Amino acid sequence: MSSSIRVVFFDAADTLFHVHGSVAEIYLRHAVDFGFPQKPDSLVAIKQAFSRAFREAPQPVFAAVEPARIKQSERLWWFDIVHHVFYRVGMFERFDEFFDHVFRVFEDHRSWRLFPETASTLTQLKARDLELGIISNFDSRLFTVLRGLGIADAFDTVTISSLAQAAKPAPQIFHIALEKHAVDPEEALHIGDSLRDDVEGATKAGLHAALLDRDGRQHGTGVRTIKSLEELFPLLDRFQE
Image (cartoon, rainbow, N blue to C red; front, side, top):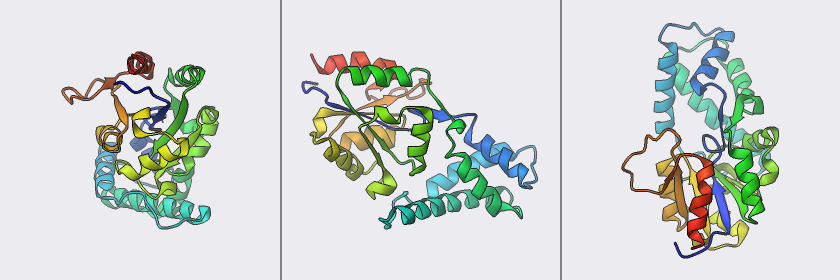
């Protein structure tokens, strides 16, 4: 680790902030409001169906380039995911209304919570004159969420898959983010909670990377790991040695 870090990139959801409650709980609660016939195992069934839907879904990368078309493509991508879920757990008459509503719910910053150390970590990193960026497969609703959570101004760049036309773990999205800062890969550190998307993706693109493993579940991975964003600072100090 001989090169100094000039830019720190972050994943967004589950790295800087997390959903208030759980995704499955939110979908179930709002589905019931629109007529979904809840059963005792509905929550577990929805969680399992989402896992399968995400595994089988294409990457959120679209041919559209105009903002309105990109947003339409993002919405259709999510419609397919959620339709896949409720096709398996139980479709209901007002599904389209439900989807329109719940899609907006996740754009509302009140559906999300910053991790306790997020704001102070970003402030301290900026005080070190480091440039900050986000590299995320989140869709364009991310910009509204960041503003609502009060951290948008901390970031010099935000690179998302639908605008970059590439999704993590593909090297292209990392290279696009690097170009925005005019830095070489070895001058950048990427932090995220996904071993595949964040650590392996960033490493293959030539960046330094660290896995954010808040719950200590990733034992024996052999990768640089932190349990809190506050642990970034001793890690950065080692890059300067």
